Image (tube, rainbow, N blue to C red):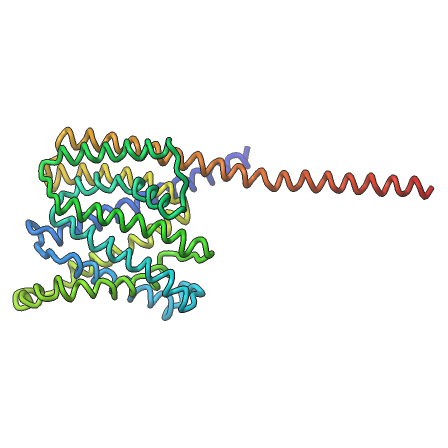
Length: 351
């Protein structure tokens, strides 16, 4: 009874910790999205410079990651050669910079709720790009599910009260670049046995991302900022806390995926999206139409089914791994038995 009680307490503790990680990640992700919207929206803080905001985030994250790795030695750097860095990390940094630039730009033109609905296309983009880059195999059932998600998002877009084509183009571009980045991480890093946690990821990727963003910034935003420099004073509280939230979100991703799984983060992401839609409608007063909700509901079911299939595949993979040692043990026992029988027969012949 005592052992059973101890086991029960351990399971309860694990469940509470898992839900805590999920809650922290949802809160920080929610905060970063709403905070970015507040800064970039012309009706709110009115600082519509998404490249500059992303560069501030990258500079802040690069500095803290450098301090954690090189000064305080909290994390060991990965053993990356210059060749691996240039061929594997830099392309991921370029894709990440484009994804962040476009996704932050979309907040200027679209509501928070509608952006979350468009983000439901992420599994579709990842699966499609995975097939194109030969990292995933085509399956009729999976593609049908992807089409259902796409139809749901299309219905949500059709029902959007404040539809903006340029904003939709920016957000869809961000989804494509982010999906490509996720697939390229598997191809360029995971397949080579290179594993980076969020601190080392920021240590290697954030500086390259900052460098890539500097190129469009010089031509797109720097001239505008130069014109407004006399009337603008950098708010260290606003941009400092915003950057700190972005850095904390990366740590939360590490905790959530490291202590639970990537699938848990996907499921938590769905919960976060619904909360953001409710917040956007009730607090920011964005218009959410019944057709919006119907379309996103359809896409939500498709994403939920996709996550269910992934869970089943993970369970099957884990069961196969557990069965493998048992098969090896059985083979070993059978071999030992045969050797024993052989020794016995040899002894009989000598006798």
